[in-house]
Length: 370
Image: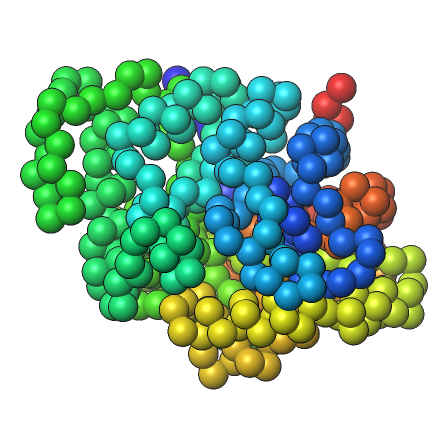
């Protein structure tokens, strides 16, 4: 049986790229060099990420942009065909599909993801989203439940259907609160013994769901000290129900030969932030999501402009590597991150930062993929 590599080497700090399927990537900026999310660029990005030894690629699922002058995330390559295409073109890197439980039928998703896994030789993963973006619910004719309890009861039932479809060979009946299914089954099953499950959660209900179901929980870093305490609590919570869970976060990377150059480029991007899009992101998240603490959300505006709220890694290769080491020291198992322009900036990260991470013992040397 094939074992997905995301679930191996759990002591190694994992690195993944985030949001390249979305226009603008992570930086909510009007700068001319902001990310162009064309398929050609995404394919080049994936092949480069695999060649330099990154672990995984993670997309955002989005149906409505955030407006502003750039209509940030107004163009988005849908995650399932995006991931399937990238899996077909790569050999080693893991590729996740981000799926909203509210907008996708679990029986259909179970077959789509199993097909992805066969195409990728056991490298597919599921980033499961219970939902928080009310305008998207409205655009798709649904209604976002006001309370987190209902959202996560629905998500739990949705994922329970997926789990049974992937583990049971015979057709079965499912009579739940939200789903009533007769004689349902799926074939083929995923190729890997276990498909890695990601889930981002900030609320009490969301973290209970993640601890019960996910292999990796994504948490926002406000301070590393606070994050370290949260990780310890989450691991204790998982252990109490006989599970283990690792915690990752989101970061933005601005790496240059000198600190002055890195800071200047960071300011170049932030000072051209798309104010309209930033206003909309913060307003929607404040009203409907708990991924970021509400008392800190307004103060994170600069971080949103730089990288969608991610932990900033700004400086020389030594400083960026030290920043990643500090994240690992806080107990984080890995991070997704992004650049303003993935194709232009990734080679320098590979050349300068990756060897430093290896020397720190955070990464194992990789053989380059031909």
